Image 1 (tube, rainbow, N blue to C red):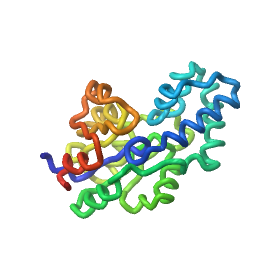
Image 2: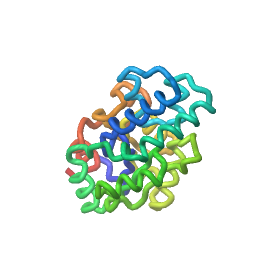
Image 3: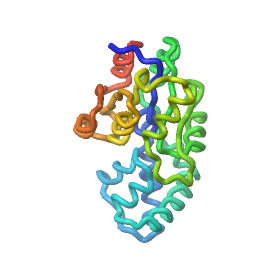
Length: 217
C-alpha cells in the first residue's frame, strides 16, 4: 500500500453526516421562493456540490434565482442548521491515528471556509487538521481541484504524495484534475457507481477502511 504524506478530506458526507441541516435549509429556501418542494432523493444530491450548481441543476433556476436561494439558504443554515449533523463513527479515531503516524490532514470543502472552520471547532475536530481549504462565500464555482491545489501548497506536499477522500464525483474529479490519488467513500451521499466511473483510486465503505488504505489501521 502506498505511503501518503497527506490525506485531504471532504467535509459534508465524508467527515460528518450533515444532510439533515443542509436539506432543511434547502427546503426553507425553496419555500421562501414559492418553489415546489423536491423529493428526498433529489434533496440528498444537494449534499456535496456547490449550492449555485445544485439550485441551478436540480431546481432549474437561473443564476440570479440561485443566488437569491443561497441567501435564503444561509439565513436558515447560519441560524442553527449548520450544527444539525453527526460525525461519522470512527472518524475521530482515524484522524488521531493519521496524526500519530505523522500524516498531515486537511479539509478541502465546497462549503464556505468560515463556516467549515466554525463547524470543525464546534465539534472539536479543527485540531486534527493542518489546514482548511474552502471558498470565499462570494465564490460560487467552488472548483474542487483548485481547492485541493491550495491545500497541497499550504501543506508543502506534492500531489503524488497526497490522497483525497470524498463521497461524490466532485471529490474524485477534483483529485484527478489536481493529479493526486483518491478514496471514494460509499457511506456518504454519492454512489459507488459514480465514484468508480470518475476514477476513484480506492473505495472505502467505512472509516476503518480509509485507515487500511492509508496504512494506519
